[in-house]
Image (cartoon, rainbow, N blue to C red; front, side, top):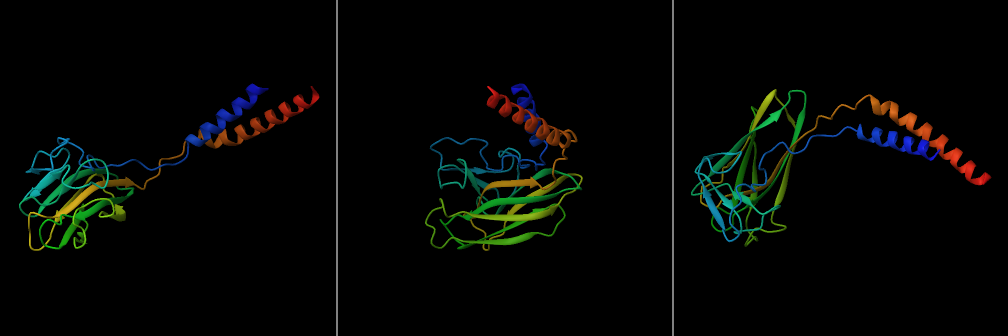
Length: 221
């Protein structure tokens, strides 16, 4: 009878597997961990073509290692090299789903302007922002200096959708918007298989009957 109880537990476990869930992060290299810079490198200037999975535009970016503390992982970027830069990536999307974008934003306080401005682009939608970050009071970027921005219910398109970030600080300088931990999550739920809808009640019945019989047998001994 203990086997009967075990069967019920297995069926209940299978029912749990059928729970709907959203996909993982659709952004590649969203934390800018690749390529991995040397442990003693503060930052490296990035013209187009040397940041995997991202296309760099404008005046380029700086890839940050030890120059400041990232919001997560070990690396981040300054969205300005000698002047304002941009990055973009094509995200796999579906027309039947909506998406949530989140990212961590800060600003390089080493030089002006004090207010760093960022625009975000999602496909053919109008630009989001500009998002503002004031560097006053932050002599360096570290824990507590980062702010998380969340954009929900972004529409999907069939195939791919282009995601882009652009530093629009005025005047443009070598000290721009800091970015890290970019994530895009699909809000489309995975369909629940039909089997768990049967496994749940059957598992409950078998488990209850098995438990009752086991308790009864134990008392009679």
